[in-house]
Structure formats: structure tokens, C-alpha cells
Length: 94
Image 1: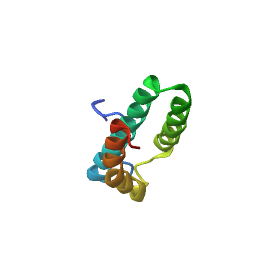
Image 2: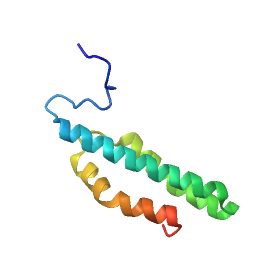
Image 3: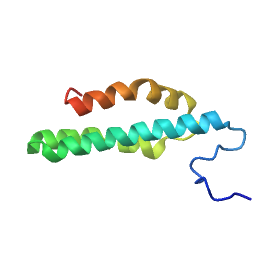
Image 4: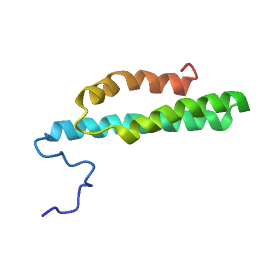
């Protein structure tokens, strides 16, 4: 029985490793950070720019909704690319 210390999202699927689960959680955290950065910028932008930022944010919301532990290639891609994307969004260059 589970102790309840971990949510079902963070538990690896059958045959999955703890490393895969950890990387998935790291990728989800990066996606969430990018979403938050777009939200923050949209909240202070002019209306036209805010709409563009919201459209960009929607892409990442969809990514978060479809990302699974089993999608190893996508998880690795997020871990490789999103730190720079996050920095760019925060700095206003993405």
C-alpha cells in the first residue's frame, strides 16, 4: 500500500524508473514556470502584446496537459530547451 507521500502523478508507471519519474516532474516544473512567466508578462503588457503572450502561453498549457512520463523524448527535449525559453520569457526576448 502507498503511504500517500507521493501523488499518483509522480509515481513511475509499471516498468518506469524513479529517474524517469523525477525527470518528468522536472520537465513539468519547467513547463509550469514558463506558463507563469508568460502570465506575468501578459498581466503587464499592452493589450495586443498581452494577447500574443496569452496565445504563446496556451501552447505550453496544452503541452503540460499532454505530457506523460512515458514520453521520454519530449521530457528530454523540455529539459534541454525550456531553461533558455524560461530565461527568454522572463527577460522579454521570447
